[in-house]
Image (cartoon, rainbow, N blue to C red; front, side, top):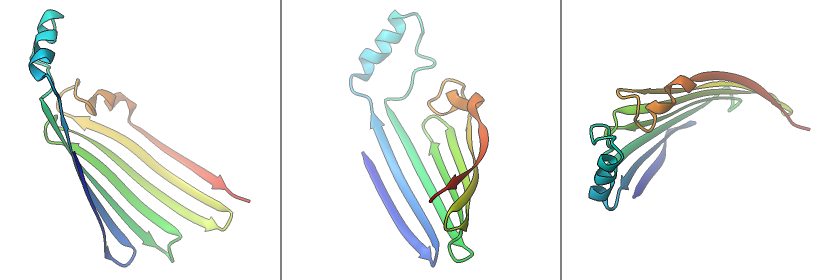
Length: 129
């Protein structure tokens, strides 16, 4: 199930929200398969995974500067993903940008926190002609 909402709260400032529910069918068979594999159920995922996302976007300097933050949080897994991004339009042909990808969480095996060693920052430019 996915529910979403987006609204411009004020001029050049937009918020987007989403709620996502993932339900595992045959959950008891999943638990039995972990036992058969010798893994045990202590690290088993929940039957329902809830995820909340938030995107904030702010346009500044006559919309040449874009500040954006995307976050994804799972209250089920207690993990999160944060993606800040800054984009600047230098002129009609050149954009520069910088951002990052950050994964955090309580347990190393959860969906998002399994990528915690992949945190990164990046920068780039786009030339159009």
